[in-house]
Image (cartoon, rainbow, N blue to C red; front, top):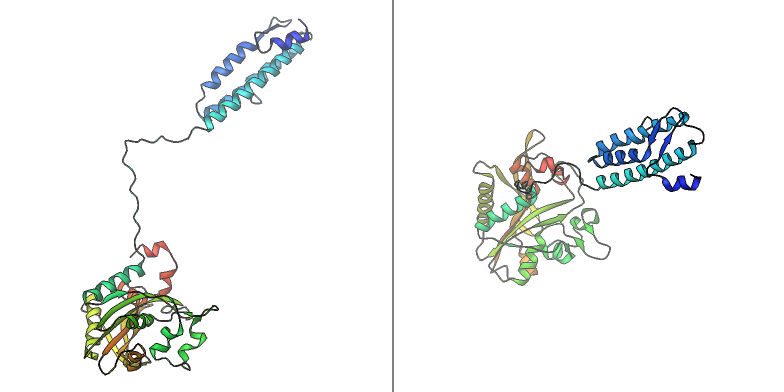
Length: 347
């Protein structure tokens, strides 16, 4: 049989006898190897097969060692047959490996098992506090309203009786926008917008974000939330204001809540007062200002077209973050905005 005949014979039955009568059956070896390969059904079994057949100490390597015992005239045909066998096994191994790798590993899905419960989210503590505050004032007859966060100076200052030369208008205390306007520094802007469009009697409460370039510390932040309350009617007095604030404090914090009102000054109210509440800050109890309040200044009523001889009213603005800190024992306002889920999940 010539060289061409040997190539055509591989990898079919090829028997080569050496001088020592040693018989090597390449075709039987190929059949055994492929049967063993297809019985490997995972990555571990496949790797064991590769080591056993194609490894440096595998079956094919051992069979090649028999070449030295063959008659020199038989060695070329044997070598070509072994090369063909090795190529066949390597190709079959690659195909089997690809098939096994494409099958998802791990335990199968039991469709009869109940599904895993889906974790429910929760409101951020600030959102919850706003909702609770609005609920309390809602039960007191105040209607929730909203207003824009980007404002003009008329609604943020002028209509609120803040003169042009007042320090509160300084850029160091406000976020003015290059395109005009500003980020509102107080929710008092909402009371002006409501009074411009709604005739008295008016009883509203507005909650939302406000912006001031404050230095961040345990009780200050450059973006925070306020709740603005306004009541305009005939014969409204300071007694009505104090009763409303004390009623809120006791309804929200409980009958033991400590609240005090200190005389103060605001351009948009006269007389005016600071509203303080005692809360724990860094392991010590301190009086913390929650906001301001007072009777609506006659100039504010005039700015929106109301006669201050006929109408009176009161207004108050409270800091939502500070209320939340008092309610839940939070010592640092900055923790509310660090987005640490471990902290937020406590509430």
